[in-house]
Length: 328
Ligand code: GYE
Image 1: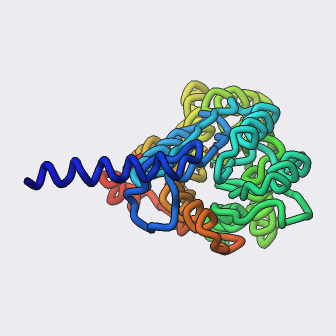
Image 2: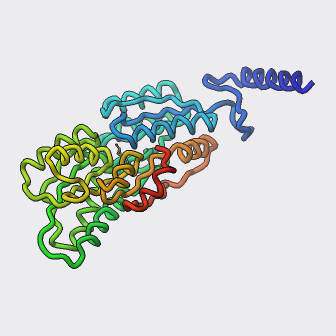
Image 3: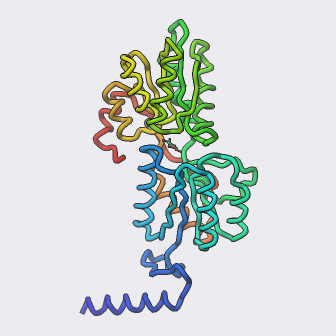
């Protein structure tokens, strides 16, 4: 009896969506009752450059599924032109909502204008754009990267409080022109300015990857006889640098103090082993919030323009406690 009833209900829902008849629709079992069918979300991801990014992609895919949202996912392999064509293709496909994590901050105005003209709301996820016209996107969900840089700098200031003599810092920057690279460098530099002994002696991009973190650290080690501190804009570059430091016969975490950003599992493991000294957390788990915002805009709501993620910091001791719970 129950079975027959549910078959009948399913048939009714199918008929209902066939009558509604608009392209991408399916049954809306999530139940707001207002929608004809599934929300279609086009998402353009930066690439797969780091552990953070892999976790971010998984979070977005899993939460789309859980929220009953149809996700059109496109991987730009680190190239802005690929992101622009993915966004154009989402516009052509008339998706309901577009979200993307802009690889760099500049150069988006034209394509964002095209989305706006097509009445498709755009949500910035994880990284910012430098567009003056903020009406080109409905919301920006992600971390405060300046704050992350400040937290990294503050730890260092506290470490060297009351000590004399120069402290030579080398910096591995993220992708040139990317919001987290610009802001993590800014917040850090501003904060360490409190102590004139703290000097950034070398600073170069490692493009957020382990491989480049290693190569650039090798050149730092060759050209700079005394390195006291490494500040890497993400765990992956820090982990690559650790390989270079060990290959040069030095002890990471002791001969060279290391600060990174992200707190992915591999970074937290190195922190708990004493190879990294401090990690500033940056959460990649943006999926659930992104799906909520997508639903909100589809329902005609106005989300907050800036939605910040909650984050903490980890010392070596804290990493030991947190590590077993780390999901990514
Ligand atoms: O820190 C890094 C990734 O944009 C916050 O991009 C993200 C950064 C993250 O490749 O690991």
